[in-house]
Amino acid sequence: MKSRVVPGRGATWPGVPVREYKDRPELFRDVTRRVLLGGGAPGAAEGDGLDFELRYFEVAPGGHSTLEHHRHPHAVVVITGRGEVRLGAERHEIEPFDAVYVAPGETHQFLASRGERLGFLCVVDRERDRPVPLAGGDEET
Ligand code: MN
Image 1: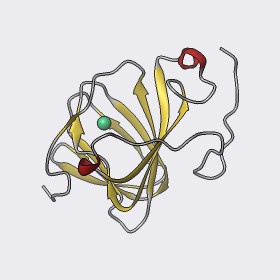
Image 2 (image 1 turned 180 degrees about the vertical axis):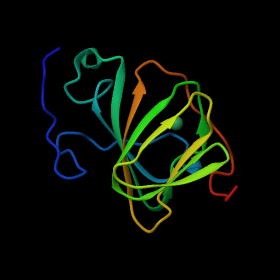
Image 3 (image 1 turned 45 degrees about the horizontal axis):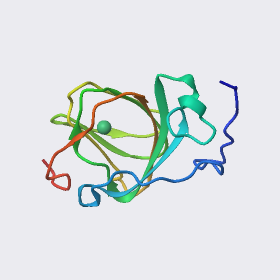
């Protein structure tokens, strides 16, 4: 694979398309997804030869990701805005440059619940199981 730079301008990447987050819009609110490296990133022939993908997600104020679990882990670093993450029964406030580890099987959700957008990088295995969504993503459980 050829080395390359993906230019970033703040928390945007002009050459990287904004993608649909997930195909169940009733389970999340105001989330965008960009694949920066690996997987389906622009110019990523054969996934850049990486065993992982580097994605950027942004949740608009008041929005949230799907409440879900799966066997693959996540490694997350917040880079803009602030919000909260649900990890099992716990809820943690997060802001730049907090790093979050989501363990295999842990139910999790990212929420822009503090009046700002929440933008974070997320590293994930290239080959991974499908997330299992849980109902009640909007509830304060
Ligand atoms: Mn997940």
